[in-house]
Image (cartoon, rainbow, N blue to C red; front, side, top):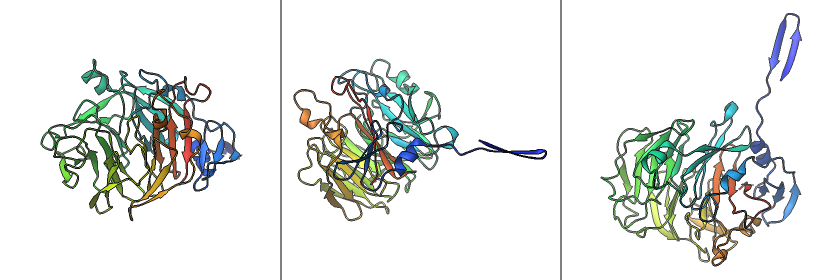
Length: 382
């Protein structure tokens, strides 16, 4: 703050709040990655080109280590959400929901102003409705309505949507009607907010032939409806699926395993299509599926679980391009001792930071496998 005194008048000028996240993003050129833990910047070929120090490392990342199973709270998920005005002093916030086997779901937030993570706690609807059966894993159950700045959650065990109060663990249920659309909505169906429709989309993968893609009004009033029957009977096995909306291009990308669909800005659904050959693991949120990424450049990306390969999808032409080398976060990974070559993306969560044109990739670790540098935070600029 600067103070200027002139005669009887004193003027105080308050400097705008700074953002380490914004500063870090500004360091990157297109195609570059920043390891926020170490300060290493990698080019598109996977080589370190500079080091900017460790001052950009987010604080309190150890909240992502723990729980049962593999000890990686961010297992079985793929995306977080960005609220450009959700933090203190008018800056943004990243939301991640995570939980491991037999562990209640945790709502975590990184405040852009403090550059540090906070464990907000277990949402009250999870505690109240499933006390003996914790709502573990996040899958793709969280959606952020950036029009109203509202955060939604669909519980692992329930066919309902809940709206966050904006602080603490208090959530309010909205009475959307699932039963008229699908007799069964699997625990691992995925959701996203679609700005063009002003609706929450729910993409399911189950043996139920109805309601493969549904929409629910984000206003909170009225019931849901089937958006299209195009996907009926295609995503027919109960497996992890994904559903992502790109705010830059207004395209949507959804599917499961090696099958995907596209929805254009005019809401025309096309597909089914197959992932490019050599894309090991498919896409989804399980331990042996690759992760889909919504790029801030209007495109979508996918990182393989069974190899070091990754790909870019241009949705307007439905064209895939294999990218060049990834930095070490996919070569330094959790392993179960048997299927280690298929776990490269396990414990990873990607969040488009629309304000700065980068993607934040958080990777959780079991200390047994990465005791010196866990977890990790990365930025990618497409």
